[in-house]
Image (cartoon, rainbow, N blue to C red):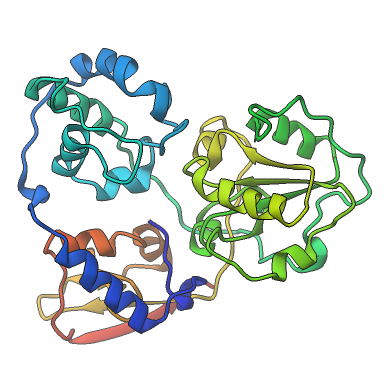
Length: 330
């Protein structure tokens, strides 16, 4: 989960995050963290291919539904949460419950198969790009227009075609529709941050209206980028597309990615037991995760976004710490 506080490039103030946390905590009915799920990944594989792949992608990369092979999702969602979502669905989304269609053992097997995608990732922003200036928004400004195949459903562009256009020096704009904190962690080189939740006119006044292609991407792989493209099309921009596979599949295809530099501040707190914890709670939409004393910026950055899940699991440290250390990414 990305950071949404203003200190981390997002739109929320302290009072907004406090209210949001209180509301979400009030919805908790079941302690899913304590649910133990025992299943077989091998038995879950054919079930996933039959029941889940059409929406979530053959490899969990996301298609019409979110990516399940998402390291941040897998690091924060418990087995109990994944099982509950499979059994009861996700109200307000196309995800239906499979409790009446699959046995308890089959749901456990699916949970085990999805959990098998978990992995450690290093997402620290080392040696990355500075935030692009408006005059850098158009990539290869002197280049020719790219020649794309007809867009799928008039909307979706394959990642490989975007990569070929960038590699060939085509004139193009690439927008990262995720929150800025995600852009910092990993993005396509030259991509300009354009958060999906921004309703201001600033971006549309900067973008070229001469037919230059504008491609947006996110990690969902379509939700956030789709919102940005919808806004641009409503504003009269014609050559626009959503990168079909999303940034996670782009990375898995070993296509170029880089990191963003940031001066966002992080606080590492050490409690009376000497446990270091990242304070991203209450004031900064942040929670805690225990680590070791003397953690560095890379350790901190790699743990951003875990705080809310920790709070809802009941593991947040809310006592005043003995020592506070501030650090930055630069």
